[in-house]
Image 1 (cartoon, rainbow, N blue to C red):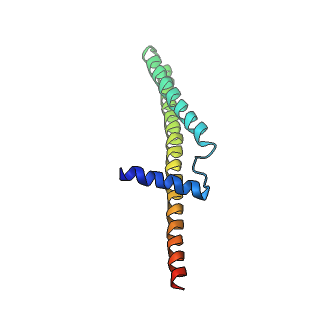
Image 2: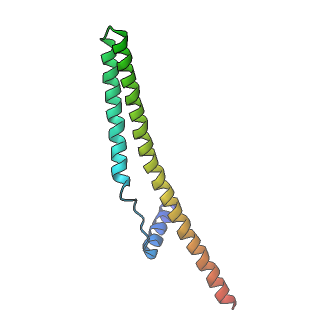
Image 3: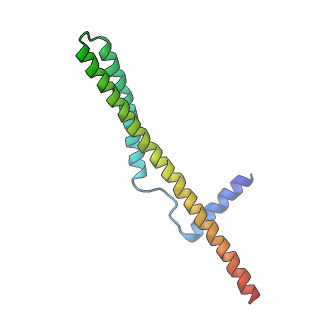
Length: 117
């Protein structure tokens, strides 16, 4: 229950300061491209690996395996894009939280100094 109260308070403070809490414009498309690259790479690697099993020439097998490894690299690139957008979203939220908490502390210090003077 305490977590829900803190979350609601955080949303109110963000709304009070009129801060932009949503993500970057490119986060959604980059995340979708990352997912598509991972899916396409997995399918391509599977197809290339299965195609290498039906070939008899060593050069054809090697070229199919190289293609499968290239598709695995595509999976890695897609995963990196997806993880980068996820981490940037978390860091953006963390920075926004730090900003709101810092502003609240500054307001408390200011109020204490005004009462003292």
